[in-house]
Image (cartoon, rainbow, N blue to C red; front, side, top):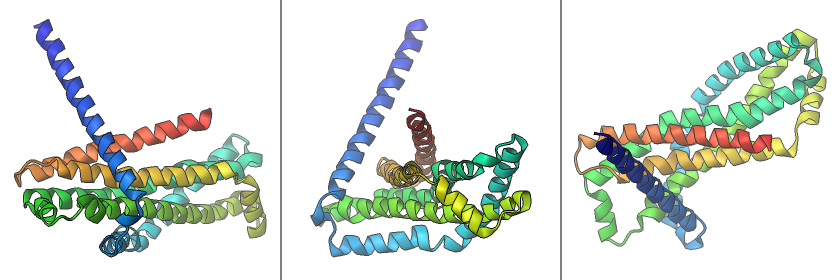
Length: 262
């Protein structure tokens, strides 16, 4: 019985390691294609434009509403905590670090994951089951250039741009609470934020957003490609893809925190 348990654990570890290796290999292949100028042909640009619209532009009204709602609540909570622990002198750096380094990219990644990643996973899985992918390959169409790279690139651009928008909205709503708690005028608030921003904060915001955008599209695409040839396998593929995606998001977040502590 002990031997069986050990064998099961070993087999599970081998399967997990093999899956991670294949995913990393697929990610590297996609990155290589992203660096090739010939990948950016007119057909790819058309798909990329449409994907950016669906992923980022279409969601802006709802995204702005959530940014104002959650941003105001979170900033108000952060400001009140700063006053509770007598950190008024550091309130600018606290707001900047929390908004740019942590909350804006993380919240944006979660929202785009729930809205777009599931759609991309389902789309690729359906194309796999309907043999559309094999048809495209039959006509010598590069799936990576035509289907995958536009979605991955759109994810990176969308998460980065929306993270910046979210950060701006959060920082703007922060003025309401600094006015309430400190009686600070707008010019003083802007000067406080500008003096608190460091290059590191901008680097963290952009790099995390790009990393989140990359996995937000890569993992659903990879999961869709692994779908079994059955319509009943599509929901399983989407579920497995989302679980792996959320694990990847939290791994990136943890790694980012560890790197910032170095």
